[in-house]
Length: 183
Image (cartoon, rainbow, N blue to C red; front, side, top):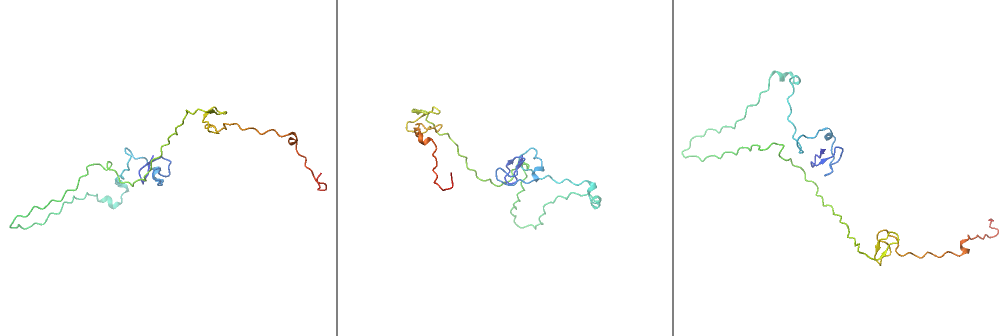
C-alpha cells in the first residue's frame, strides 16, 4: 500500500493515481518500503556520520568537538538607584516538547467534498392484482392492461388475417410486351 503525497490516502501498490484526490503517485514511492509501526508519514532520519575512512585527510587530524552551550547574555551591571526598581519580567521559557514527533499529525490539504450516493430502493410491487392471466407466463394482470407486466406478451390475442384466395397464392406471371426483348 502506498500513501498519496497530496492527501495521505492509502492506495494500492499498482495504482498510478490517488483514488481519493486524483494526484499522480510518482515512481519513487514504489521502491520505498512502508513505514514501520505507523500510517502517518515519518520525518527523515538524522544523517549518520561518515565512517573515518571516507573522510578527507584534513578532517581526520582534528576531531570535531561539540559546540559549547550558549548562555544568555548577562545584563550589564546597573548602578544602584536611590529607590528600588520594579522587578523585571522574566521571559517565558520555550515550551518543552511534550510529545514525540511521530504523535503529532502533519498538516494536509483538505480533500474534495463528496456527496452521499443515492440509496436505491425497490419500487413497491402490488401483487394483489387480480385479473386476466398472461397466456405466456401466467402472471395476473389488471383488466385495463394490454401487455403483461412481467413478460410484455400481448394479453389479447389478435385475430390472424384470413388465408388469401387460391389465385393469390399462385405467383403472378408477368406479362411481357411483345418486342421488348424479353421472352
